[in-house]
Amino acid sequence: MSAVLSVSKRGTVTLPPEYRRKLGLDKLPNPLVIVEEKDGKLTLEPAAAVPVRDIPAKTIREWIADDEAAMAAFKKSK
Image (tube, rainbow, N blue to C red; front, side, top):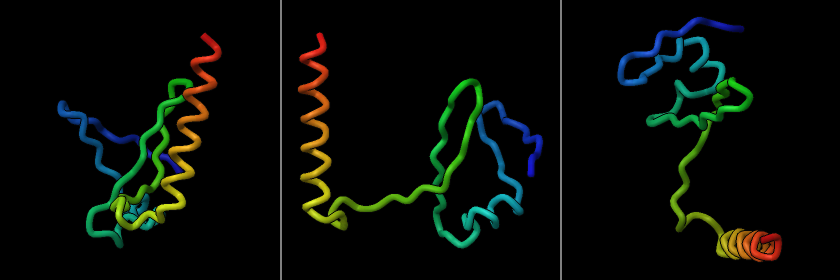
């Protein structure tokens, strides 16, 4: 399925109802999407905002460890 959408001067794009329904965005009070640009193309994916307090502490510790490992590898590569 494809469509041509207009972009307002402010950069606003309105997703047609059939896309919102297909992605389940019509069922959410404040739907969010992740926009990614790659090779001159934009992709949209449904997203969710989760309060930090609802993320398990173990998951946060894993994210921090991953970030620290990536930074250490980056510093060694310099």
